[in-house]
Image 1 (cartoon, rainbow, N blue to C red):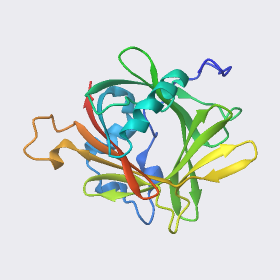
Image 2: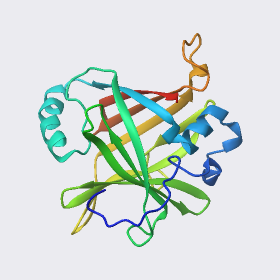
Image 3: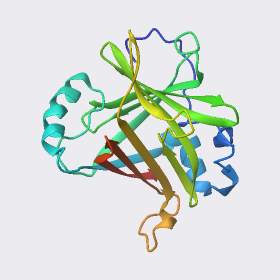
Image 4: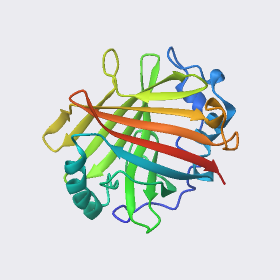
Length: 228
């Protein structure tokens, strides 16, 4: 965050302060596993490992693009199907003078070599009775904006960009205006107890992140989050 003159503010503990903030017609937080609730509110107390899988026919393009993403240290995933990889997390409070969105915090993720994997500003916005996750990832001369719907999924959470009757979507924000991208994504976050028999402690979180372009799946990332 060296590009910003930030005041010294206490860092957030997690991706959200209170998961009940998202209560609405598609999401009932009382149905959540306590471990999933704890993960979202205390994310910094977890260690993360991830594994990437690039789907055919996108593997060659992913390998080439990995050189650029490594250089700019953003969206910096391995270009080959391998893993697991360690991911370290740091949260930084972003004051309204820099980002006026509700409850904005930066989530900075780095690898075992201290190279940045992903930096994004996390916030929320509400439309009618639905609260959305609103993510902005800085890019050269632009930013990648993702608006996610949240809903219950078994005893966990699903976040997706399905735009049918919502604000969900992925956009490139440029100086000349936003551009809607032909991309979609889905996160499914569950407690390890949803996968019996499991060798993980009950507080471990297992998550899957899937992405599509023009309706074709090109990337799956699997995460395991262990409470430290």
